[in-house]
Length: 169
Image 1: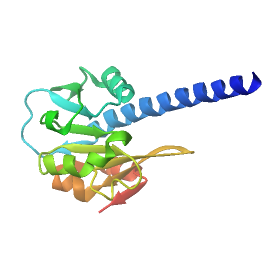
Image 2: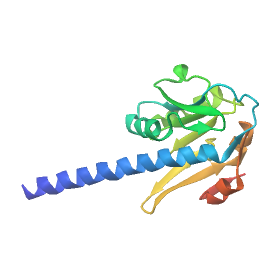
Image 3: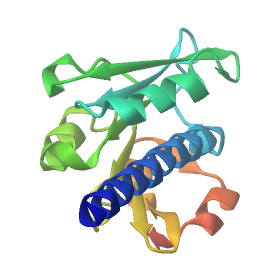
Image 4: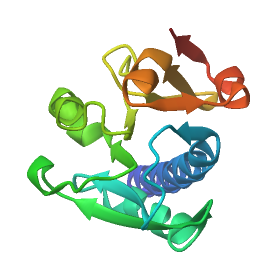
């Protein structure tokens, strides 16, 4: 019985920690948006943030934090697309860990479309993601790929660049 209680406690603790990581990632993403300049002149309509795949927890956190907030004169709208074919034109696309195998296909689909591609996994900024989360025992940091950002017509502020754990030029 004691082992069962210990295992249950560890599982519950892991779930709480994981939920906190996802909430922090959603907050980071909201702040990334504020620190990036989209070079495109298309400033009409909603500001679209798309969660790719089936990570409902991050999607729910993104909706809580961002839905109906504003970027300049545009209202943020968060949506979810389970497949690449269903992803609409958007300003931000988030690719969770369980969908990383689709990174190159997403990059190809949104090449030059002024879309910020955000990932969560090992060395993904080096593989073409604009911003990649890195979670370690000491917390959450991020990597910034300026080459990918420029290819997408995006520019990170100096403040955002300085906060990145790794900047790829």
